[in-house]
Image (cartoon, rainbow, N blue to C red; front, side, top):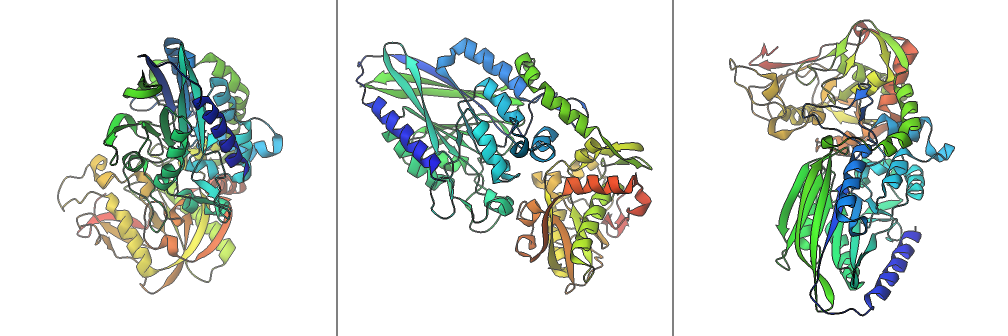
Length: 575
């Protein structure tokens, strides 16, 4: 755990030596360009593994590092490679079947193969990459292997050894950019990751790593970087910019990027990720200095590339940032880089073959299109599998309920052959299965919280499914449905009083199957994060769905579909 700190000290010493180099004092301006990707989530190529086709969405976005590479190459050619940098703000090695294949099917920790995202990023030539929370999903050994394979430094200043408090990863890096006739411009890059890792991946990091507050970490490292001669200080942060958290308790703020900009003097820009938003340019005022700090975020999956331009003026023997601006470029405007496509071909083809393996025959077509407002068989399939696994593990002493969310609106089990990609398209996250004990009263509170998802709609008023859901911006993945009991959701009632006819006594204790993200506090649902855990065998839910289908050979909704909830208004069904 001490090696990254030693590397940082060595780097700092080198930077300090460079700072002592004398320079002429005359007026001179230079422009440098910093590019940023973030939340790539395993998207190397412009391919949708769940649809077995080129990626497309309603906005006709494209995805992948091969698209990013083309934009990067054009900017380097236009600005001069020696005056550009390329950074990434995290969530790289989890998210697509490509990542899953090289973590679980042919894990790089066993085969020694180069991770596809390392292969692509090395070929493109990244200057630094910051750790995201999803980097920890497959455990510390795989993360360590990927870091060793990366040519770029992988940063995480606030991920520290749980025992010593020493940074477990490289905190920052410095790059010099040559300037004709003048001292080079020195750019310092500080990497900050998300404190929520301590909750979301507790099984992988508990007792090994702690995640300190982003603001406090930056307050320590930024002055050090300035003191070592950084002319420009950048923060790449895997944290959104709204100052809020999806969890409770004493864990530091999740989305602290704007807070870092406002509260830590000496930062020129914060290049952030995690929120998956397209933020071309935003300025906040630092409270101590009154200076404007630039923020930008390039969306997700390689759909955008942030491009930040800094103009520096030579004054009194030093470089000063005199202006800065940023924008985001849409990768759907360029073709894929054939170099990256060729480089990815073998690993991509292996993944395509894997996800197209048949696992079962479905008696009928099951669709998730209406799962967010109707009880559907395809979501009941998830709950049936989770209930089966938990019941086998803990016995049948207490009723076993199960919770699932409509992660996808487009998932379909076709009538006939069902493949791995069909199931993976339904359960798109690498969550693991846990189970907790709760009371009937706590379950009702949980369901009331979930029911905030619906827009209040008076009895007799028109109902439009497109505006009925996602009230207050609540995403589909934060709407949970429950199996094992019956209940109605009265959408004519205000938030907090919508769950009616729940067939569960308030004092009754039940076992509830949940995914690890929900159990760890993601989404802010009540009671579940503090509930006693009775099962946590690190079973991946998606793999459990695949195994269940393979063992049965047949997916027959008559064996698991039990309509147990519905939307109502004053007792009358909405649908």
